[in-house]
Length: 268
Image (cartoon, rainbow, N blue to C red; front, side):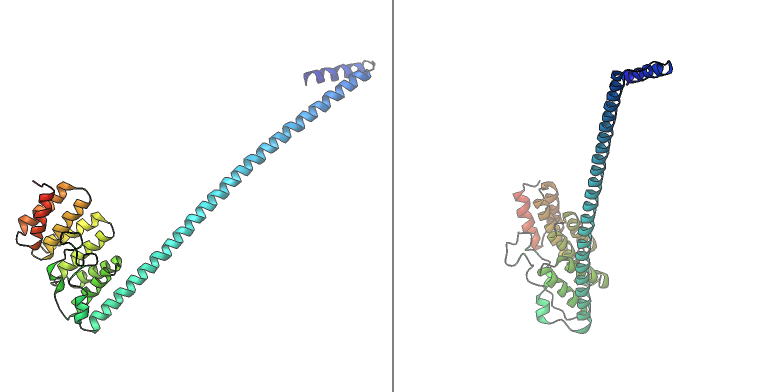
C-alpha cells in the first residue's frame, strides 16, 4: 500500500515535470492496484460469509427456542384438557351422589359397599397398612348421609381416590356432626396415603384424633399413621404413634397391633 502511493507519486512528479513514466512503472502500479483490489474483495467476502454464518446461527437458535416453547405449550394444553376432564368427571359423580342421597333410601347392598373390608385390605393381615378400618364403617343406615358416605366408599374401593376424597369432604361439609363423620375424615387421609402424599395423609390421620378423639376411628388413625411412618423409615415417629394408641386406647383392637409393632421396633 505504501509502495503504491510512492510509485504513484513518482509518476505524478514525472508527468508534472515533463518527464515520462516508464512502462514498467505503470505495469508495476497496475499490478499492485489489482493485488489490492483482490485482497479487498477477499476481505469483503470473508466478512460477508462471517456475517451470514452468525446470522444463520442466530436464526437457528431462535427457531429452536420457538420449537421448544411451542412443544411446552402443547404439553401444557394437553395436561390442562386432562385435568378439566378429570374435574368434570368428579363433578358428575358428586352430582350423582347428591341426587342419590336425596332421592332414594340406602339399600343393604349399598351399605355393604362401605363395610367389611377396604379396597386393598380384604382378607389380609390385620397388621398390614390396608387391613384396619374404623369399627363404625359397617353401620347399616337408610338415610341421605349414609347414602353419600357409602357411595364415596365405593369410589374408594374402585381406586378413584380423588373422586372418593371429594365425596368424603362433601360429606364432612354437609354432615360434620354425623356419626360417620370420623370415618369420613379417616378415609380422606386414606385417599392421600393411596396417592402417595405422605404429609397430607399424616395430617389427615391427626385430624381424626383432633376432631373425634372418642371415636373408633381415632385409634385406627393413630395406628395407620404409625405404619406409614414405618414405611418411611421413621422409627422414632412410628414408635410415638404406637405408644399413643397404647396410652390413649388400651382396650381398642389397634392396641394389640400397636404393641406388636412397638415390640418389633424395640420402642422405648
